[in-house]
Image 1 (cartoon, helix red, strand yellow):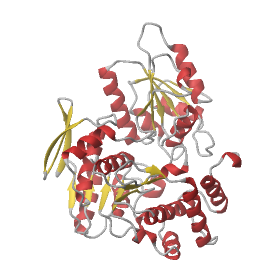
Image 2: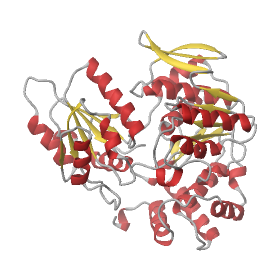
Image 3: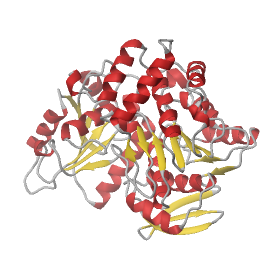
Length: 447
């Protein structure tokens, strides 16, 4: 990127990327050393809701934030990765209002101070960015901080948090196998690493019994007060409403603003987590949260922007960053539900990176999608070549064609549109990086 077009903070991160290795190096030694030099800002945070899991981390974080803000509390939020701008990783709480993305000058200043403190010692950029989370959240007062794990849990840089108000473990499935293991129970053990002795734990909906068993046994060993979805709390749709229930009672709520039935369980986990963290949750807060929650790039519908003229008139365009087989299943289920309510031909525009399982992702859409257009991810040296990705889609039982860009794929779908028939439904996804490119090109970055 042209340096003159970069924000001040982005320029600082660009310098760090040139000095330190990309990717993850799972250990707590380097981040602990750095935080010691910085006077341990992670020990000066407001109550922390710490969130791990393969899928649903971002959604439950968004629901927790919406609930707490509905109660007038100021809420810091850390998520990763970002979609368009680095600043999206840090939302600074505002008392009585909606938190705001970190100010660029403030962010750049914190990055410079961290780089000076590190003094060129070996570290990853993610660890520096995690240290920035702790400094920003310690230096700006708030009522609560929601901190999402980057990768895994046990050795993730965020896991220097020693006394979370609550640890939340969302659905676990196969992903990042080279780092976390090739069986769900191994991955669950890594995610369970964020549990701390005697601290509350909320376990979201788990598809695999083997993962659930590991999570429950770890919580029992650490003597954590534990609430498990389906046992201690639940949520389901009834007459177009969301019914939430736990040991404290029942609430009749609007359906969540975030589409997809999987969001019912995510919303339930958030409600139970905020309660477990010690905050009062009223029915009014829950109602407001369900209708105000937002989470960019996750089953987000594009209703305006630069890309829409490339698509057939009247087409639905959705973007979603889900990128593993578990995510593919819940996204495909959401598309099937849309199809049941309003039939339209479904087309996929997909880009993925080479650490993912494309065949596993595509299998969820077999018999549902008319065709897949496989595209590159801009600026990625780890993307799957569109020709290879199209082969994976074919292996999963789908008709597929490589394309050079999302715009070209939209143009191709436009050419197939038939007058007087329903305009298509288009899902762009397979990678958060692709979704970030799309939101940037569309002129609708997260705010």
